[in-house]
Structure formats: structure tokens, C-alpha cells
Length: 144
Image (cartoon, rainbow, N blue to C red; front, side):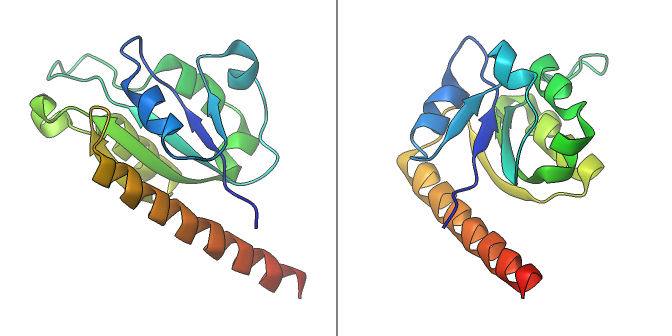
């Protein structure tokens, strides 16, 4: 069964990168120029942080994520969003991930704070395995 890759962006803190590394599946770093400018060849999941801390003029969407989503094929192939945030951001917690999910009509698969806990990693792995199974079943139905 194909594992759905994770495309992620992480700031200099490395919190999202650390979480992505614990997922035990293919992850692609959008801070890498070649990855950011690539086009996906199948379903994928976005993992993005949110930075907004209450300033209404402050954009929460990382530029590398926006660049990757500028591709119509990449937007079309995205199957879900995972968000990292900081509860100190109050109403803006998970703003970037939620905004992308709402705009794209894709589900928020999972949310975690900062670099997540071991329980967060385990639950996110389960969700991704369920997603892989659903995509596999959908693929077989389409081929039948």
C-alpha cells in the first residue's frame, strides 16, 4: 500500500521538522527550493505551522507553503492538512492550517501544539494509516 507523503514547512525552531521526522513515512521539506518548486505525482498531505500572534495584518501562511500551493496540480492532489501551532496565539491557534483546509475544501486531519507529544505522534500516525487505507480503497474502486 502506498504511504501518502507529507510535505512540510518548518521554521528555524525545527519543531515541525521534528514532528514530521517522527511520523515514520516519506516527508518532503518545503524549505528546500527543489521540493518547493516540484509538482506532486499523487495524493499528499500538508503539514504547516501557524505564526500569527494576534496582529490582524500578520499573514499566518508561510511563503514556502504558498509557493508550493500556487501549482494547480499540487492543490488538486492535496488530500488533507495537519497543523502545528501555539495555544498562546489564542483565536489564531492553527490559523494557517485551518485557512488552507477551508480554502481548499480538504479536511483538517490533525492539530498539535509546538512539536507535539508522543501521544500526538502516535495518533497522527494512526490517522495517516487510515487515510492511506481509504485512498487505496478509492483507487481500487476507480480501477474496477
